[in-house]
Length: 302
Image (cartoon, rainbow, N blue to C red; front, side, top):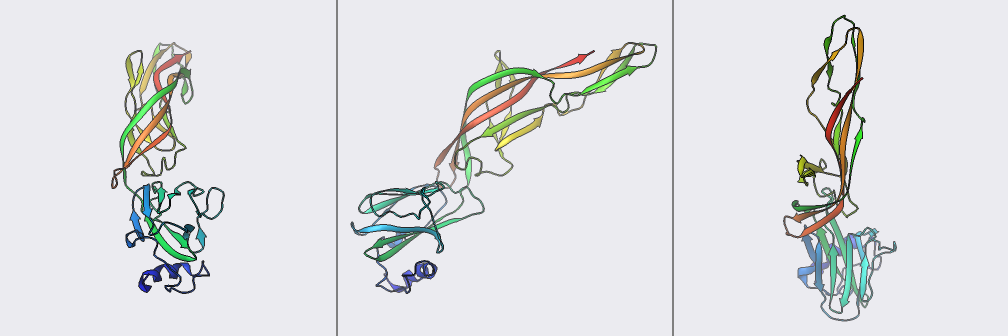
């Protein structure tokens, strides 16, 4: 290797690898073609890197900075001295070697908008080294499709979030009295959950609107709309207006008015397919969606 080619690597590495005290031809060997020395991508996937030569080489170290080696699933520094696969402790990177003249780097998508991943793979052959630097930028994504399969449904009645009021008629005549909408605090909820890698990290923090199945009850659509895809419970108002309903109250008496709501709760397994806009690769995100929707209200007058 020529001197000017190895200087950038050794300036970064010298503080960590004490044996690399200078950048001389004696310290380095060309194990990969120049085209693979520095790779910049904005997607995940598998990348096979050929080796110049076919024996006695190993992956000695994988690190993010000279003082931060990447740990494997056993919390030990990643290295691969023979055939097999090693995986980073948090699952975003794995390296496989099943041929003498190549190895494969497998990366999950970088969903972190604030962090550019950069790591170095140090190869070793008979005490001499070669280096590969991989930079993975954050990708841009779009939703290709969504699929839902209902696994549970429940219809129930509750007065949760319903208001109540006592109307008093102090006159000697039958009187019509108004009351404020007792259902103004009632909400419908949507709750997306997923344990998949990056399930909610690839999009804006406020979430995105996605298509979900209509709520059908007895062959009738009782609810139809999009939902906000984001982690956790997202509530929206059942009614977005205030009413001024009225009832007739007997002379010199009072009426107690309260409400109750009939809800439909459905639980669905979902698969959201997103696509990396640059690479056109797709990723399936799986999880559970729970929706609770008011389907009718009832005003109770005592």
